Amino acid sequence: EDDDFWLALLAETGADRLLTGESGPEDGSAEAADGPVDRAGGPVDAADWLSRWALHRKRGSLAAVRSRTTLSLVERMAARLREQGRPVDLFTGRWRPSADLDLLDLCAAHGIPLTLPESAEDLHDDCLPVKQWLTDTRPGRRDLTAVAADAGCRRLLYRAVGTVCGHRHDTSTLEELAAHPVLADVLREWLEDAAGELAAATGLPAARTALER
Image 1: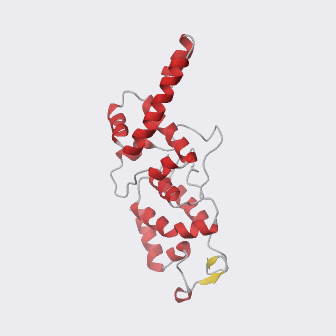
Image 2: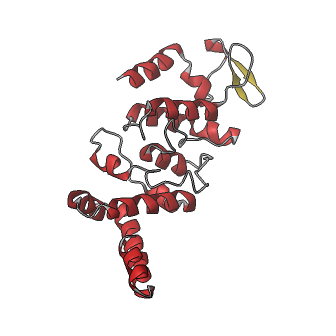
């Protein structure tokens, strides 16, 4: 794929080491106080590169498909990203905010600073495209443990699972949700909250709202 080609080109030229912090004098780069610098003498902002790469991979769609090559590079970049301390934006899109679930999980697992959607406008139901993630058969799928363990990411995952539950006719996706160890736990939480809202509903309008949650 095109993305793999560009990442392979980075590796062949040694430019990937500017992102990981592994570069040195032998490949023509220099070292500054805060790590490698590019040939123009400026520090390499790994977080900015990853944010732009995540946006590029969406190609105008809601979210990118799984990329094991990208995940491998970001895993090598993790220490550099933590060291620089600049938040990575995986959500910005040309249409509306969304993120690659596997990439988000990897970043959360490695303690990489992240910018998460906060405003009501940005917190839409497809911030994390769970259904696409479930149907993507490409290698590199992560278990989503880190996403579920992070309070901010779990809030988005909870909302995404609720979106899938809203499409009750899609029984195959619901079955996949229930069969996944991490997503099943989030699903259980969502169902318990839905049941609680229904039990607390007063009058038919409130009950209807709870049922359509």
